Amino acid sequence: MSNNDSNIGSTGDRTVLGVTHSIVPAAIPQGACDCHVHIFGPYDKYPLAANRVFMPSPASVDDLLALHEALGIDRTVIIQASPQGIDNRCTIDALNQLNAAGHAARGVAVPASDASAAELHELHTAGVRGARINLQSYGQCDPEAGRQALARTVAQVADLGWHIQIYTNLAVIAAMADALAHCPIPVVIDHYALASAVAGTGQAGFENLLEIVAAGNVYVKLSAPYRLTTWKDGRPPEAARDIARALIDTRLDRMLWGTDWPHTGPWPGKPRSVDACEPLHPIDDGRQLAAFRSWVSATEAQAILVDNPARLYDFNS
Image (cartoon, rainbow, N blue to C red; front, side, top):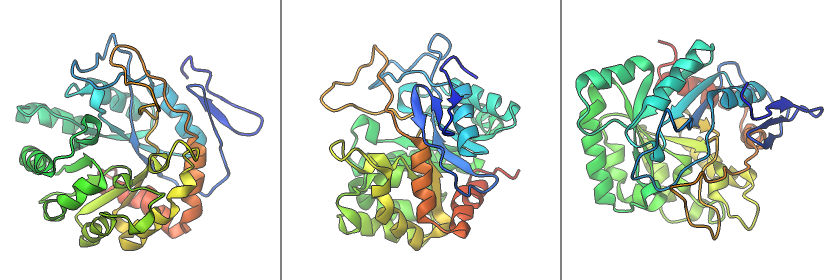
């Protein structure tokens, strides 16, 4: 356990990194996977990229294990975050620590554009099974830039059997729909493609998302539902239900679930900082998981939490 006072209270709640998570009894199948988490720091060992757009507060492997123990999560996918740039050492070391602790883990990396075959093989051996294209964090909304990044990354990692993970919004997804649907390797879209829970299933671009999901090459992470809502309404995860159900009903076998722990992101009215650690958002991951579990049947939970990630991330190898 870390020094962040992780503990179980009398109500069964768990406090990790100062955030209390409501551990609500729910049927979580064995082998459930959290497909979107990050590990940050310590920064004297894993320095952040010079071109970062923010500096997150540290979040350790021990903190993650405490959270997942409370939630009933057995498997993890660590995602290389934008402040970490192309230095994947923190992600790789975290994978090794988790697997050594008996907590099955895979990773999604951001390899350098000139990474050698040997370097890519080392990432694969460590458990990396995907490469991430992060447009949203850099404010990149040009679909042509997205298409170019997609083609370049596919050429780099296709022979490894990896997938592409892309973080962008509905408008960019709609403009890139043909390239994503016909990509020669699977594509995973982060965080519901940032569809608005307020605008609902009739919003511009959402039908395009459903169409490419239906075609079968595109997965969607039902992760970070609080990102679909507003600060004014308290960012309730329950508000994402209709968006989630539309996606699940389109292709159950292309849905994934994740927390997005430890919950970085801008704060209203505050500029982002690159030189001081930003506070993490106090998101209740127990509530996130309980909301998701209330939307799906036991069969659907098995598919989304266990079977789909096991297949995509090669957990059974």
